[in-house]
Image (tube, rainbow, N blue to C red):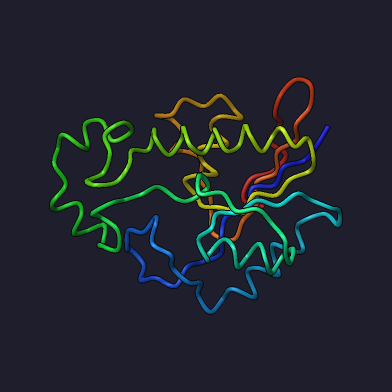
Amino acid sequence: MRDIFLIRHTTPDVIYGTCYGFTDLDLASTFHTEAARVQNILPAKDFTVFASPLQRCSKLAEFLFGTPFATDERLREVNFGDWEMQTWTDIAITTPKTWMADYLYNPMPNGESYAALYERSVAAFQEILKTEEDTVIVTHGGVIRSILAYATNTALEDSYGIRVEYGRVAHLRVNEEGFEVKGLNL
C-alpha cells in the first residue's frame, strides 16, 4: 500500500477570467499562506516528488520539499493554443460551434484537446506509478482531473465534474485492488 498526493499549484498571478495553460505564470501574493496550508496537510514522511516544469508548480514543489525533484513536461496544463491569455468572455464570442459540439476531442486552435491532455497525463502517471514509492505530484487542475478520472474509472465526458481547487490536495491510496480516493480538495 502506498500514498500518492496530487497537489494543485496555488493561486496564479493572473486576472480572473483569463484563459491560461502553457503560459508560465508566476504566483499571487498569497503564495506563502497557501503553500504553508498545503505543507500542514502532508504527512511527515519521505516522498518521491514530481512537478510540472511551469514555475507555478515548481515553486510550490521547492517550497514544500526543497530540491531535488523531477519535472515532467507531460504534467503541464492543457495547451490552449491561440486562446492563451485571452479572457473566457472573448473566447466565447469567437468560438465556433463545431468546437463546442465535441470539446473533449477537438483541439483548441493551435492547441490540444482535453483528450490529448488526458492521454499524456495518464501516461506520465502510469510511469510514475512504477516507482512504487509514496509520491507527490505538484501540477495543474486539468492534469489532476485527468489522473483522478483514470483512477476512479470516470468517463472523460464526466470528468469535468471533478472539482480541483488552487492550493489543494487530492490523496490517493494505491493497493492490490487499485486506487482509493482518501481525500479531495484537502
